[in-house]
Length: 174
Image (tube, rainbow, N blue to C red; front, side, top):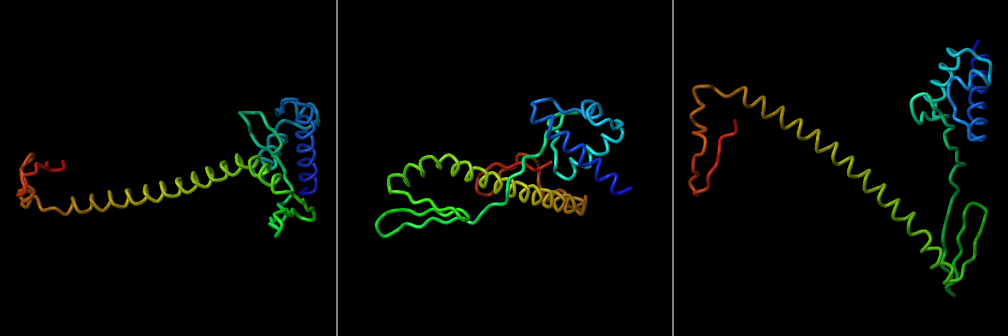
C-alpha cells in the first residue's frame, strides 16, 4: 500500500512538473484528466506534496512545482599581490583583473542590498515579536497589580487632572 501511495505521489509530482513546463495551469482537474486518478486521490497527493514542499499553492486550486536548487558550493575570493582576483566557486576558478572585479562588484551590488534588506527585515520581525511578548507580559502584570488595589486606598492616586509637586499636570490612568 505504501509503495502504491509513493508511486501515485511521484506520478502526480511528475504531472505537475510536466504541465508547468508546458506553461499550463495545474489544477486538480487537469491532473485527474492527465493521470487518470480519482479527484480524492489527487487531492490527497497534492496535500502531501504541498506539505513536503515539493509543490506550492499559488492560489486556491492552482499549483506549481517548488523551485529546486542544487546545494550551495563553497566560495572564496582571493586578492593576489598584483591586484588580480581569484574567485573560487566549488571546483571552478575565475581569474579577474582589478577592473573586472570592480565591474562584478557593481553587478552584485543589487544582490548585496537585497541580502541586507532581508536580514534587516528578519531582525526587525524578531525584535517586533520580542517587544510584543514584553508588552503582553507587562499588561498582564499591570492587570494583576490593579486587581490587588484596595478600594479604600484608591484616593491615594488622587483626582484626575491633578498638578504634581513640580507643576506638571498629570492624569490618573483609568
